[in-house]
Picture 1 (cartoon, rainbow, N blue to C red):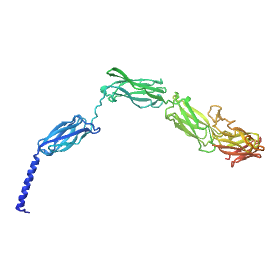
Picture 2 (cartoon, rainbow, N blue to C red):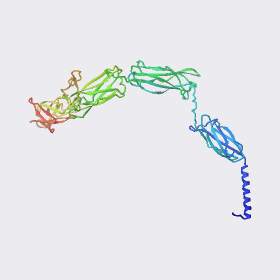
Picture 3 (tube, rainbow, N blue to C red):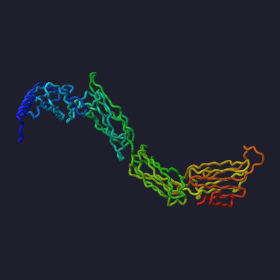
Picture 4 (cartoon, rainbow, N blue to C red):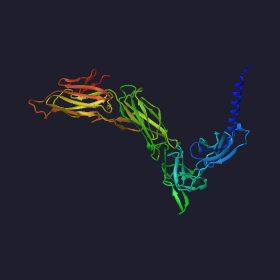
Amino acid sequence: MRRYPPLLLLTLMGLLALFSTSCDSTDNESGTVTLIGQVLDAETSAPISNAVVRILANDAFDEEPDLDILVETDDQGRFSVDIPIDFTADLVLVATENAYDTERRTILAIADRTIEVPPFRLRRLVEAEPESGSPSNLLLLNVTNDVIGVIESGSQEVSRITFQVADSAGRPVTLDDQTLVRFSLGQTPGGGEFIAPSQAATDNTGQVTVNLSSGQRAGVVQIIAETDVTGPGGTRTIRSQPVAVTIHGGLPDAAHFTVGPERFNFPGLLAAGLRDPVSVVVGDKWSNPVRTGTAVYFNTTHGVIEGSIQTNADGQGTVDLISGNPFPPTGIAVIEAETGDENQARVSTHFPVLFSGLIVIGVEPATAILGRTYRLSVTDHLGNPLAEGNTVQVQAEGTKVKAVGNTSVTLDDTGFLVLDNNGLPSSYRPLTGLGITEFTFRAVEDLRIDEDGFPTLETITILVSGPNGRLEVVLTAGGAVARTVGAQVEPLPDGQVRIHAPE
């Protein structure tokens, strides 16, 4: 065991006594500690008035008298309290309020000091009851469907319209200020449409709902809401603006069933896989587009066509007619479209489309002759018109000469003559003749050219080009010569020459 010198022991004992006296002096200090703070809503940071803050002594000081003090917050959520203490201690503060959770704080309390407690932020547990004043405004809140279908159309037939009654501050009226709202119809198509209920009381959010059910006719329906309110000046009626809901989308009607191709003539005999769009427009008996998704089926006597479409919001849809086997031997194919009406009856229509082929030029006379009138025919190899967009160009070459007449022509789409309505290719005949398949021109002196000598015609060039291909022929004094490689020149007994485009 270690031994200390007597003088050192005396010194240590003196220091211990001094330290003991100092500790006793600190523990015996007394006075007042002032606590200030605030209680706030955790979500809005709004002050919470009348919240209770409970102040307790820490369990570590159980040997001291119990400390249990309650203090309430003011209108700004603030509190201030003076607590007499005779020792330095940890205090526990617990903030509570109805409909809120609780929050704890631990504070070191020292006599004769003012301590600012960090703000309490309490989270709401129960929604506060809404408050409102007397009804003042009637507003449209929501419409589930701006457009509904006529009854039994397969479309949505009911629309829910929700209104809200608010006070002068724009707050929805609560049950304490509940009011009865009446509903009525303004403009209607007169097809049996109706609303239900005819009146209803507002709920705790000021809302009230009415259902509109469609009838048998298309058109616009107006819904009006109104209620009576009592104020200092007496009773008055407030109304909403008319809410418009459109009724349409019936089933197909034969009188409003339209089908047609993008082109009545396309070069479908030149190759397989060429496409000609076919469009349909379907309306109901009120001339409105049928409901979205109405099915229309297609078929064709020749080639291939996409089988069906479902109409869009405009009652429209498009499929492609595709060239391919079986190719029409006469060039004419008949396309049919069909659907069903409200009586489960078949609604159908059909129309022709011409599959045109290789270019054939016929011209008479077959030689270049000044002042002569020429007859020119332009068809495909079946004698049918060429497709829209083909051009016919005629040019005279020589001295002081020009070509006049049908020298620059662009062909239009092909029309048809309807022979009967049995839906067969033989029911239709493509229109031919002047300006379609037959043309005339002349090679004459060009009087605009002021030159000496006589006019001399050397050649006449005929060029046909466009969707059906390209074919060029030159008439000379000795006859017709094809400039297109592979084209065949066929002289005819009547003096006409026929030039066939190469296959």
